[in-house]
Image (cartoon, rainbow, N blue to C red; front, side, top):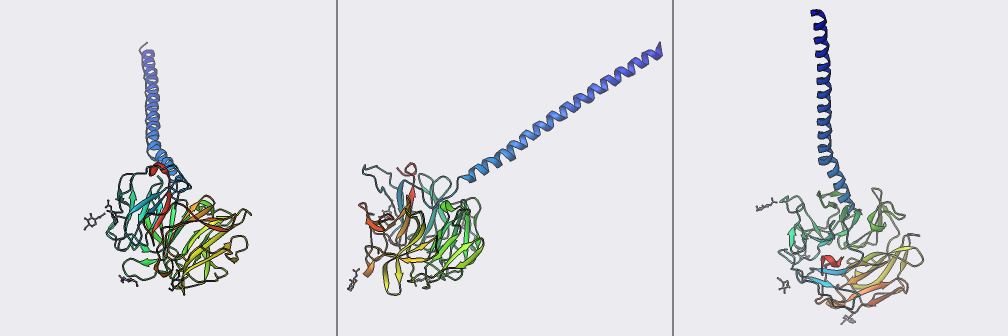
Amino acid sequence: MENLNLIEITSKAKIYRRHHCVLTLVIVVLFVLCLGFIIADKVFIHFFQDHHHKEESIKLSGSSGVTWTIGGDEDNSVEIIDIGSSDDRKCKPIPNLTFRDKAYGAFGFLNEDGRPVVCCGRNENKCISWTGSEWQDHPTTASNDTRLELPIYPGVALFDRETLWITGGKSVHSNATVPTSLFFKTKYGFAPGPRLPESRFGHCLVSLSNSGDDNGEHSGHLLVGGKPFTKAVHIFSRGQWYQQVPISNARHGSACAKVNLDSGTSVVVVAGGYNLYGSSSDVDMFSLKTLEWTRGTTKLPFPLHYGAAVPRGNTFLILGGNGANGTRHKDILKYDPARNAWKLLGPRMAIPRVYFLAMSISESQSC
Ligand SMILES: *[C@@H]1O[C@H](CO)[C@@H](O)[C@H](O)[C@H]1NC(C)=O
Ligand SMILES: *[C@@H]1O[C@H](CO)[C@@H](O)[C@H](O)[C@H]1NC(C)=O
Ligand SMILES: *[C@@H]1O[C@H](CO)[C@@H](O)[C@H](O)[C@H]1NC(C)=O
Ligand SMILES: *[C@@H]1O[C@H](CO)[C@@H](O)[C@H](O)[C@H]1NC(C)=O
């Protein structure tokens, strides 16, 4: 009887221990699951959000909207020009850039929110970004890293959707023309990029792929023009520079853009610039099909150098710039690919601007 009881008690104890074991296991599993969810939320959801955020790439210019003209060799002011709209929208005035000196030779881009960032005017070594109400030092460039030397008069293009490529230019500190390049990513700041075939400033760097994706039919970047004077033309593709057919007329300060012709071919238009004899109205076109140059059959209506090129639809605008005999322009020109002609648009800038920045920015950021 006692023995039986003992067996009963022992087996009860076993059952109890088994229950206890299962309960512990369940608690541990629940705890691990919980921890898993927390980790997943902290790491993966944020990773996905980050990833999603990165999808909103940086740009050089919006596809539509109003045009901001920024700085130049006269001042630090910003003017908003509404091209192609008859109604007189009231865009709020934008405060002047917070640079100590005139913002000439600056470069810029639109951040992932579509807001302008302006980098490196004369005597400045940082970028400032528009918050919607004021200009603020851009966090990734406001460091006191004196090794970071941003150039003025560089050739700038998107390298890929997230990366800006800043090639050559003049050192802000030493005035030297540099043969180096920089990459810029919004979150990570500046990093060294590939060397150029030679030192250059006032040249054009044009991304040959649409929207800066490096997987288009014509991938890579075209480097043309600049000072010291050179007719040499290069394409950078898959980490290498490839020499191309030279351009007819060496010049710097040209306005350049990729344009899609009605025939389906794409060309890089190199308009105006400053050649050995002065300001030029020459227009050259580089076919991305044949990789040959055609001397433009239509010249610019007047000689022009160091204006600002802004993409618009399947073509581009040239704003302002220096002309012959020291003329300084307020005019806005549009290239018409169908007629191979230049059209002088109605709206003009309030002040002449040279060595400045122009970007197309969505109306919601401006008006
Ligand atoms: C912006 O700069 C222009 C030209 O230098 C000047 O006339 C104007 O007063 C400035 N505006 C402000 C708000 O400081
Ligand atoms: C840069 O240096 C200045 C002056 O020494 C200092 O006031 C500022 O906080 C520094 N900025 C950063 C981002 O370290
Ligand atoms: C840079 O060069 C320009 C033009 O040659 C000159 O006016 C300027 O004083 C130079 N600046 C420096 C810092 O050497
Ligand atoms: C520039 O000045 C020269 C000499 O005065 C003149 O011959 C030429 O036509 C002018 N060019 C332009 C574009 O005004």
